[in-house]
Image 1: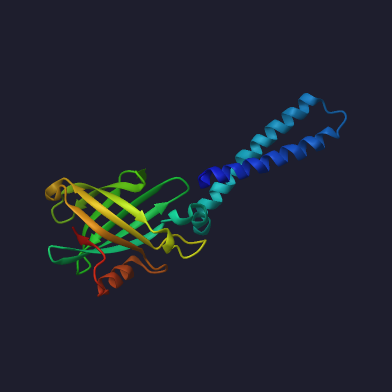
Image 2: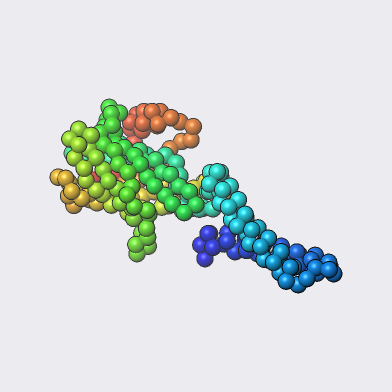
Length: 221
C-alpha cells in the first residue's frame, strides 16, 4: 500500500466517523423523516470527504516538510549538483527538481570549469519504474552548437542518506545513456548527485561546486 492510498483511507475513516456521529444526532430528531436524514447525511458526508481531500493535498503542496513526510525517502524536491570528467576536462551540472503530490519534473544545465553554462536540459517524461529502477527521459541542448539530443537516466535513490523524517535523501546514484547528435549510445556511469545546501543561490552553489577539489563523483564509462 503506497502513501497516497494510506492518506485516502485515513480521510475515508474520518468521513465514516462523521457519518456515524451525524446519523446518531439526526435520529434524535423525531420529526425528521428517514429520507430527509439520509439526504442530509449523504450530501454532507460527500462534501466533507471532498473538502478533506482538497485541504490535505493543498497543505502537502504548500509545505516542503509535509511533502517530505508524504514522499519519505522519495522526496527529491530541491537543487542537486554533480560533476564528471569527459575528454580530460571537468564538467559540472545542476538539477532543479520540482515535485508535488503526484508528479516530478527536472530542469537543469551544465557548466564548464569556468562556470559558464554550456548546455541545458529538461525532463520530457515522468519518473517511471522499470524492473525496480527509476528512469526518466531528458531533452538536452548544446549551447555552443545548438544541437539537440536526448538522454535516459536511471536513478538509484539512496534511502539511507535521508537526514530525518522531514527531509529526503541527500544522495542519488545515476547512469545516463545519450541518444542522437555525435554522442549516440554513449553511456555515463557512476554519477552521484548531491542535494545542494539550502539557503544558497545557484551562483553560490556553482562557485562552491567548481571550487571543490575532491575526486569527481562522475566519470564517463
